[in-house]
Image 1 (cartoon, rainbow, N blue to C red):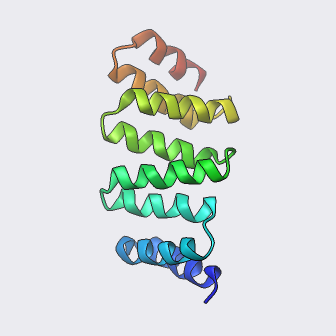
Image 2: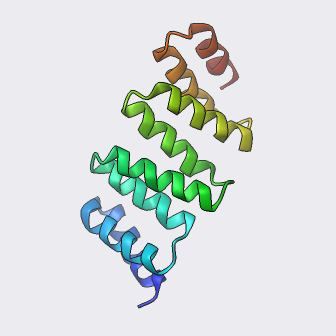
Amino acid sequence: KDASSFLNRAESKYRLNNFVDAVGDFSKAIDINPDSFSLNFRGCAKQQLGQLEESIKDYIRAYTLDNKNIIAIRNSGIAKALLKDHQGAIDDFTKALEIDPECNISLFNRGKAKAELKDHQGAIDDFTKA
C-alpha cells in the first residue's frame, strides 16, 4: 500500500475519535513517507490519548521537516503547557510567532504560559496583542 491509503484511513479514524487505531495508521503512513502533516496529526492523536511526551516528539519532528509548520510548533507548546513545562511552551509559542507575528492563538497561549510563571506584565502584553 502507499502512504495515502493509510493516511486517509488514519484521518477518518481520528475524526471518529478512534485515536488508538489512528496512531497505528499514521505510523504506517509515516513509515512509508515521513511527512510533516502526518507527524503532526499523529502527535494530535497521541495527545488525545494522554501521551504528551510522545506527541511532543512528533510535533518537533514535523517542525524539523517543515520549519514553517506553525501548527506543529504551536501544538508542541500546548502539550508542553499541559505537562507544566511553561518555559518550553513559551519557547514554542515564540517560534510560532516568528513565523506568524499576528497569530492570536500563539499570543494567547504564550500569555497563559507567562502567567503560570508569574510574568504578569508579559502575559498582559501578549493578551493585549491577541
